[in-house]
Length: 204
Image (cartoon, rainbow, N blue to C red; front, side, top):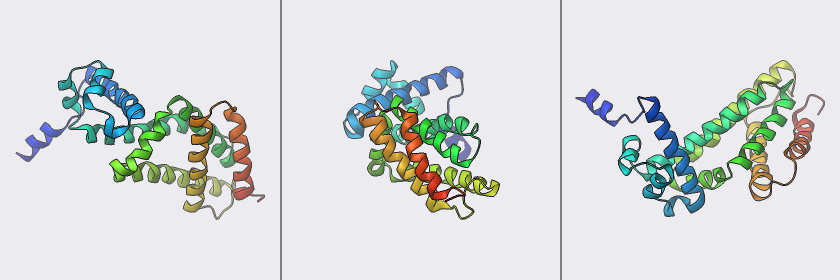
């Protein structure tokens, strides 16, 4: 019986068409919540934007809270998937942080709604909010640790450094990605990266 209940509650798409519908709903939720905020956003608004029936929503999500939680995780994953491959091409640890910020600025400029959604998550779903930043910091800590092992950065880099760099990136993304995207992202990333190099570079 427990297995039957679990199967009933599992809303994972089982077909390519189902996955497309779920993706359309998430994209519509990003637009709805990004424009109206969580409290004023609605399920009917999401389905209207997605161009699908109300019943389709409940095939994949239980409630407005449920799709918001899924959206926060999805947007966090989108940032990871956008930045990760670009960082992989970096020559060293310092350049990886420059490319990471540059890539994030590019993403933020294309998805400005991410800031409103993540900020609201602090009050709508604290667990999703913390997971977004903790997972990001964990990836950065692992990246810096590997860079230290290669001799690219100081040997004493740790979690505090990762959170400090992430905090800088978040506010640079807000200022130069969302509020005003007229300044070249490459220029912003280069200036910030000079601070990183002076702080944790091997010659610091």
